[in-house]
Length: 307
Length: 292
Image 1 (cartoon, chains in turn purple, green):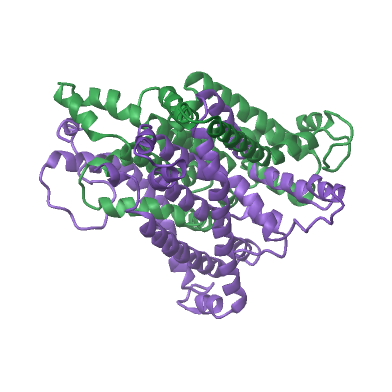
Image 2: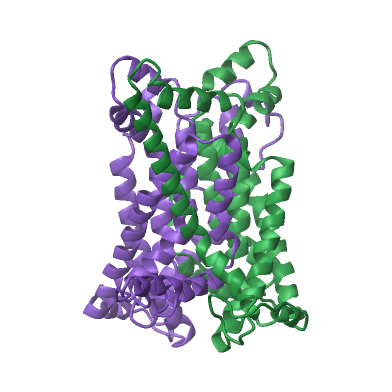
C-alpha cells in the first residue's frame, strides 16, 4: 500500500531495530513498507521478547535442572513415567475439550439469536453475556458452590419433583459448568464479530435461488462464521486448560488438573524445576493441539470466499 | 446495521409474504423458541451473580441462598477493612493501564502484520497465536523467576507488564480479525480519489477496526482486573490486587463480607459499562456500525 508507506516514513528507523526476530528476511522490494512494518510492530515485539519468550526460556532451562541447579532429565522422566501424572494430563485436556464444546453448543445459537436483534436488545443481552466477567472469579466460583450444593436451589428443584438430586459438586460436571459460564463470552464475542461481517444480502440471494432456511444456515452462515468459531474455540480451550481457580474451588480434592500441580509444586513443595517441567509439558501438548486444530479449520474460513 | 437486520428479519418472517399462514406460524414458533433459549442462557449467566448479590444481604454469618433476612451489616463491615479499598484501587489502576497499552500495541502490531512485509513477520504472527496456548499459571511462575533474575522488585508496573502478555495477543487477534473483514479496495479508492494516507487511515481503516479496538480494550481491562493466576506469583503481601485479597481471605473464612465485596465490584462494573455506553455505545463493542 504505497499511500500508507508515507505515514511513518521520514521518521528515522531506530538503528537498533528493536528486538531481533528470527526468520529469513524476505527480499525487500520497497524499503518504506518494510521499515514501517517493523516500526509498528516493535513495541509488541519487545513485550513478547522480554515478558513472554525470556521467562519461558528460563522456565525450560530450569525444568532440566535439579533443585540444586545440576543438569538432569529426572523431572520429565518422573512425570511421564508415572501413570498418575499422565492421567492428570489427559483429564485436563478432556475438561478443556468439554468446555469448548459446551461453549460452542450454548454460544453459537445465542450468537445467531443476537444477530437478529435490534441494537438495543443486543446491548442488554451483551451486558448479560459479559456479566460473569464483571465479578471476581473467586466470588463467582463460590456462587456456583452455593448453587450446585446439596442444599442449593438446583437440588431443591430436584427434590420438589420428588427426585434425588445428582451429585453436582466436586466432580467434572461442576468444573465444566463453572468453566462454560466463565468462557461463554470469549466464545460468543468473536462469533458475533464473524456473523456481523457476513454480507446480509447473501441469505436472501440464496433463498431467491431456491435454498431452504437450513441450507442457507449450513452453507452460508456456518462456513462464513468459521473464523469466529476458530478464534473462540482456541481462546476457550487454552484458557480452560490453564485455569486454576475455578477447577480448584468447584472440582475440590477429587478433580486434579495440571495447573493445580504446577501451583502446588511451586508454592507448597517449593520444587521449582518440577513445577516448570509440568508446566512445560502442558505448554507443548496444548501448542500441538491448538496448532493442529487451527490447521484443520483454516483454509475453510470465509476470508477466501470473496477473493 | 439496523437496515441489515431489518432486511434480514423481513426475510426470516417475510419469506411468508406470499406463502400460506402455516409458514408464518412456523417462523413465530421458531422465534419464540429462540427467545426461550436466550432467556435460559441469560439465567445461566446471571445466576451466580444474583446468588452473590443476594447472599451479601443475609443476616446469617455464613453464605446461604436464599438469604435469611435482610441486612446491610456486611457492607458496614467493609468500612472496617480499608485493605479491600486499597486492593481495589491497585487492581483498577493496573487494569486501566493494561487496557490502554495493549490496545495501542495491538493496533500497531495488527496493522504491521496485516499489510507490511518485514522480516520475521510470520514468526511474530505465530508467536501471538501461541501466546494463547501458554497456560497462565506457567507464565506466572516463569515471570516470577525472570523478574527475580533481573532483580526487579514487585510493583504495580511489573504486574502491568505481566498482564500485557495476557492482553496484547487478544488485541492483536481482534484487530487482525477486523482488518480481515475490511475490503482493501475501499482504502485504495479513497487514496485514488486523492485522500492522503493519514486521512485514509482515519476515515477508512480506523472505523473498520473501531469495534475490535474497543472490544479489545474491554477484554484487556477485564482480563487484568480479574486475573488471579499471574498476580498470585507477582504480588507481595503488602501489594495485593483485589482477586488475590479475596482469595487469601477465603482461605481462612467465608463470611458474607466477600459477597459484599463481590457486589460492590459488580456495581462498579455496571457504572463503568454505563459510562462506556454513554461515550461510545456498548453496541460498538460488537461492531454494530450503522454503515457497512
